[in-house]
Image 1 (cartoon, rainbow over the protein chains, first blue to last red):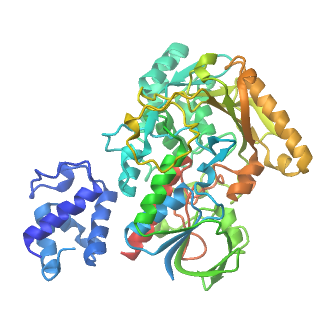
Image 2 (image 1 turned 30 degrees about the vertical axis):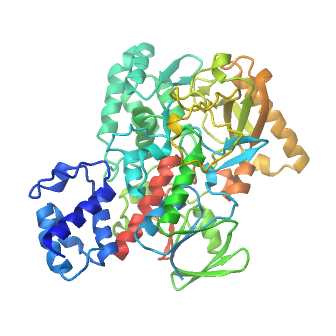
Image 3 (image 1 turned 120 degrees about the horizontal axis):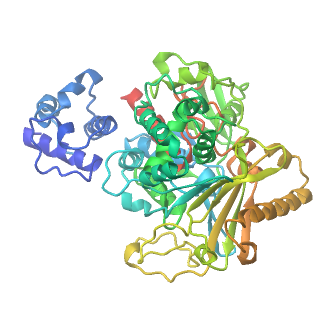
Length: 86
Length: 508
């Protein structure tokens, strides 16, 4: 999956977890939680969705990488490079 | 065979099931009864629909709200606000002999009422609100403290303390006379600051969406599937044995049957609630405080049980001059929230009507639909159903399980009739001529609750001592529901979600 694919997939996952949020104008470099309503339970759901769809396990120490969209894509790229979009 | 087996298809069991199935665990929910819902089930009798337990949902939040227990649980369960078809309360009242306080979903009303009836307590009430807003559920050392003591420290007039405690106790205390501050805070917010509401067609709407969501996530639901025993071995639950002798294998078990009820399934001696170690307090740090605090007890079953009558009227309640959503009444200056010595105590209680909610013009006002269709997928908001003639009043009073349990069948029926009359008589000063307008009624006692839900002593709020970290003596057996944490519909849905999330995070 390319970086664009990964970003699209993240938007897809966010749309499922917080369906009422407007995801069309996100600033990739700002923390997600400052732009949309994401509490810690929602955040854990993101991690669990990634595991469910792609079998990616993200250790708790790495959660810090997922604060922004660009950070998330960068973190996931090596893990998802060889995967197909689910 | 399964990753998780959940005992009980009530609110907490279904919510836990949804969360686990949503993340690809193989989940089976086992329900002893032929219907889902447990303490909050529904049934049909003589062509009418009845809700077993629903008076109101707490923690009302509007569709656009993003914070708070209701939006959070909807998000976690991937349900929409519209799924619950919520209508807000019209308004309720706390009725003591010397004073009445009205409240609705705008906290300003209660504040104004307190100002009017207790003018010297304006500052005291403000201090109380301040304490509540600053209360941090996860951290506070005050969680186990006595609410009566804390209330007395900010409010001078004991009558106001009793009046504020009244709805809180009736809508969520498993404990007699007092309630721990943690629970008080949660319930105060739930009832007074966020407010009360009701799904237009009753609890079956909520249950329908929960079951659908669960099944669409791949969960398996078995009804008429009672669990006889959990076979332990080596600190783990090994097998589940069903009433019909079948054995199920599973990695984990979550039981919503209740603490003592679950312990009995393990053939374990009744487990006292032990102070938990910090490492296991993953849900909240309250367990240790509660176990050691002034409100701690052993794992006794609760003493709090109720009788309730659901009365069908030949008119809408407002035609009798009754348009309150809920009345919490008490006939003495002091609240006596405790197991009565007699079969029941009608000197205090609850009167509520499912009709007295803010249904808009295009919606049905009551759910006595004789078509009984629970599968409608149509856009209900645009369908104008004929306004039904019949109305509903629910009457509730504290009851003594042991007194009812001792009765032979004929005497049991006699006492039911007698106490139905007592409750109606007590309600008539709020609803004049109520008795004349009752065309049908159904009545349940603590025995009914125990019979249909298996909950000991007919407890609807669980045992006084909660297991906040959900753990048991077996490393793969967990409890959810009223005995784990919060009570009521929103409370137990939240409980199921929290316990499931705990398992999901462990396996992550």
